[in-house]
Length: 418
Image (cartoon, rainbow, N blue to C red; front, side, top):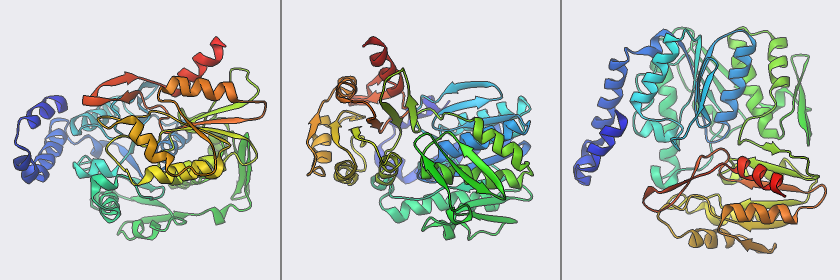
């Protein structure tokens, strides 16, 4: 249905469509909810929003609830899952069309799931995709500049995110909760809401914590929490999931077991190991803050960094910034293609290179060849960091052309063939 409407939209004059756009999106959202009989009213719905960490938090919440014996559904950047069935998200958008979302929730209800976990985005709120979803809980991770061209300003981006807490406030559900990262400068704005349970989380609660190359640990309520995942950002992600689980009366020992046994989130600091004597990490990092935190997670290693990190026609402001971050943390830099769309990919990489002043860099447009080059340069103990795409399933070119792609699969193919 969403595809049919997209084709109809293409034949409407642009000015006319922009004038009627809010009504158009609202009507679609309402129609989808009516067709699928307002399914979110029949199930516990957890929304997760923020610039970074949504997918990781969604997966942590999912494993904790499953460990506690609940049946879950999950829709986000990485995948669509109902019960034990899971398929990759190949839409190149976190929140697909309104009919898809309402249908997904209806399927979760029909399959007798206890919870549905939804990643919710600012781009989704622009098109009213958050409408007619009755939330029980919302987790806010953080906020940093992103989609600035699309929203017009950072302030508009923030307002789009705040619309999601308004949806929580208006939800007819009882005993609602919001879980907010109070270390984030915008966190207090997400706590300005009239609901029953307002919960914040901060690293100060669990200091001192331990970050190692092969994992992390901290103490929460006299219980040692350990995870094989890396990075301070994952402490935040885990802590938010713990806070949510507490609202559902999940025992801390169940939480501890779920987190300790959860070894990988695809495309999120994903370690690729085929027996090589150096590390290869694939990560989605696509904002300056997330890229810097990725590099900081591997402080005592010679870093070979592969990045393009900026798609064509969007967020041009961050290109030079991304280059300067790589310049600060990396020993070697390889610039490569990501998602140029209709823009000249070499122009994109030239913009990124303007931020590189101290480290010699190489431009290899073919992403597979760039990965091959990095592997050929790696020595014992080095870390190759491939950022920007994570599990993103396509490299997007002119006129919406696309090449099927998966960074991790390409890495494994190269390692096995050598």
